[in-house]
Structure formats: structure tokens, C-alpha cells
Image 1 (cartoon, rainbow, N blue to C red):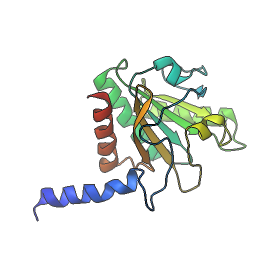
Image 2: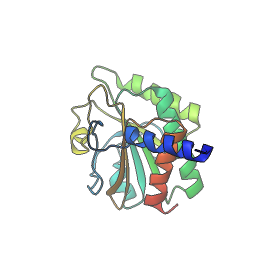
Image 3: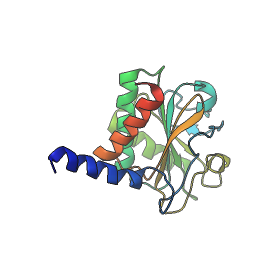
Amino acid sequence: MNKTHIALTGFLFALPLIVSAGGGAAKSGLAVGEMVSAFEPTHVTGPDAGSKTCPVCKYGNTPAVQVWVNGDKIGNVAKIADALEGAIKMEGPSKLKGFVVFIKPTGESDAKIQNLLRMVANQCHLQHVGLLFVDGSANEAVGEYKINTAASVKNTVIVYRDRKVSANFVNLVGDDGGIKALKMAMMKTCGM
């Protein structure tokens, strides 16, 4: 086997671990073909900072990525957010939107999560990716988006266009393979 074949084989074996699929893989989020719905998160950073603007309502049919975070490591979230920021800068903010939606843990103050999100935005120099949160796993949007809040599900990534889901990733890892898979999904969805 040559090096290309070995690398490609490794990449293909890694995909089932990050793409939500049948079998033993964790399931979370709206399935491909389902429609995203309106919700009102608290925007901490990004274009809608300081508001409760519905990203789906405001940006309509613009291709977008929502990353729902449920206890993932901040380093991994930062890598995914950074990749989204790069894609938006390349495509332009009128052609692609990105949102990282944190599910605020029960009992955590708004101030604490806002400080955390501002730190991530500053660290990654995010201008176009919005960091936002919903108030706990009981929030209506968590149910409507079918986000699995089990401790084993750290993040759920939903890629959509015209409000229709085109890709879903569960426990996306912000390494080369994970980012490549996300970029491929964005390219297919956005025509990048």
C-alpha cells in the first residue's frame, strides 16, 4: 500500500466516529432532510451580540452551521469555531453563517458563561461566528433540535441550507480529519 492509500483508509475509518450514523454511534441533532426551526438564544459575541435574535429567522435561507455544545472541551470548540471563521471569511458573511450554541449547565450563572464565550471569541479572533447560549438542557430549542444531552455527547454540528439539514456530526473532533469532514459538508451545502 502506498502512503496515499494508507492516509485515505485512515480518513475513511475515522468518519463513522464523527458522522452521526446508525449502529453504535451516538445520535444527536436533526437528521439530514429535516428542517431547522426558530429559537431565541442569547448572543454573547458575533454579529448579533447583545440580542436574542433568532439566527434562523434573521438569516433565512443562507447556508449555515450550528455547533451545539454540551460540555465539550473548550480547546476542541475553539478549533471548530476557528475553522468556521476561516470558511466565512473565505466565502463572505452574506454566503455562510456560523453559530456555536452552548447549552448552559444547570446552576451556572449567565455572567460565567458569557465570560467564557468572550474568552473563546478573543482567543480565536472571531468576528463572524456568533457564540451564544441557551438556558440549560430543558430549553425548548434543545428538544426541537433533538440535541442529545447525555454526558457522552459533547457536541452536535448541524449544517443546513434553505433551512434544510444537509449534514449532521456528533462529537466532531477539531483535528485535521474532523475539520476536513466539516469543510467537505460545507462545500457540498454552500457550493464553496
